[in-house]
Amino acid sequence: MSIKSLIQASFPILNEMPLLDEMEKYCLLKNYPTDSNLIDIGSDLIYMPLLISGNIKIVREDKDGNELLLYYITGGETCASTLACCFNRVVSEVRATVLEDVL
Image 1: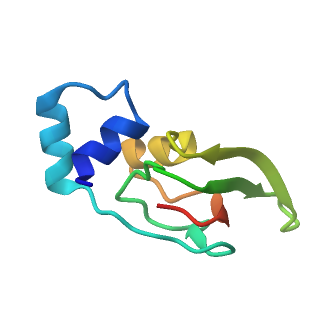
Image 2: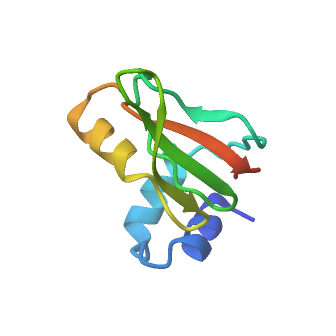
């Protein structure tokens, strides 16, 4: 299945062909296994993950290093915190941990 087809199937709102053509040029398919970190606190983010499948937990840390759960994302979703970091060109303040293998 092509990248364009995967995006269309998982994100039906993204239905404009010029946008999908552009995304297909630059998108990269990556698999992340359970218990790996997709994004870590302090990472320089130059990409935005679009989950095709899987589950991810998004957390922040308090000043003592304790995790604070923000939300979960699953197939057909993306991370709002990552979007903000990419748009503002700031390092990540969240950690994204894979709970179920991700594509």
